[in-house]
Amino acid sequence: MQELTKKVVEFTRERDWDQFHSPENLAKSISIEAGELLECFQWNNEYSIDEVKEELADVINYCLLMADKLEIDPKQIVLEKMEKTAKKYPVEKSKGKSTKYNKL
Amino acid sequence: MQELTKKVVEFTRERDWDQFHSPENLAKSISIEAGELLECFQWNNEYSIDEVKEELADVINYCLLMADKLEIDPKQIVLEKMEKTAKKYPVEKSKGKSTKYNKL
Amino acid sequence: MQELTKKVVEFTRERDWDQFHSPENLAKSISIEAGELLECFQWNNEYSIDEVKEELADVINYCLLMADKLEIDPKQIVLEKMEKTAKKYPVEKSKGKSTKYNKL
Amino acid sequence: MQELTKKVVEFTRERDWDQFHSPENLAKSISIEAGELLECFQWNNEYSIDEVKEELADVINYCLLMADKLEIDPKQIVLEKMEKTAKKYPVEKSKGKSTKYNKL
Image (cartoon, rainbow over all chains, first blue to last red; front, side):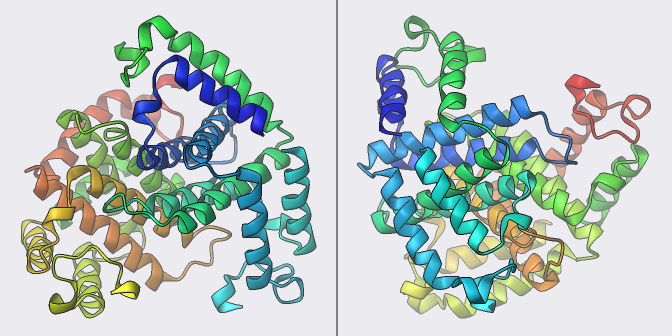
């Protein structure tokens, strides 16, 4: 992940795009690209895997840029969140259910 | 990234949540979490870094689950997309500009 | 609003698109179009008013279709929500502040 | 719609919230609320109609505020967009199909 982050940051620096990448603009960009990913599934399940790959790549790309900008380790935050989620959703209570924790 | 994916997949399996994780539902989830991340920046720039970390972690978590579900290598798709983007935005044409490629 | 709803529903019926307009698909569509609207403001504030008009129109269009599909009166739900919000954000407590109600 | 807009604008003025409602912030807010609406349909189709009403109301509310802020007539832009869409999707070509216009 570090190696990949390095590459997307380098790509951005070469183009002098860092100036546009405020945390806020990156948050907007993640939402915009997430919408494009969702569009692959708008009306039915006959999605194009190639389109999905491109849009998912865009979301991940902006996530890595945001993590880099805020000096966050993406791996660490995912592991930390998993610990928190594990407390909200203990296996015995949540197994096989899509119910939200506050209604479990 | 592979190691991290393994962990989020394992977390999901333990809870028997795989049944809810159709590609479409994961695309919805990425959009929903992207909206929560954006909420950290809704009215001004005084964001809470702790909230940002949690919401960004949620987005990345669902991206990894979707990649796993579709047997996509996240690193590879980001690199492939970067190549495509490099052609749309050559350094000399796009340097220092936020203009969309079709208006460059 | 009723008259406008009638027109967008008629437009849809003529094309036999009603079959695609499950509440879930309309919710996805609202999110997708909201992302396109947000794209007008992605990097800076130099938005094109014509693009904003088109994207905002798309969001409103799907909102009206969803209200029609669920037999909801859009005006009534906005008024009801305003009443609820007024209790969470009484004028004296919230005036001039963008703070969320749970932190007021 | 004009009458409703008047009420949501009045609600905002009473709280002196107009200062936060730049077009950009309203675009973010529409996306955020669209995400919350989508959350009602995240894992299955057993949505709560009361939650849907509240979230749809939030989306419409911000749409009306944005239209007011930009001095746009919501009805007019929806009608104008319908005309444009009618050209992209003539009845005879698009009837009963969810195909995007560029693939029709």
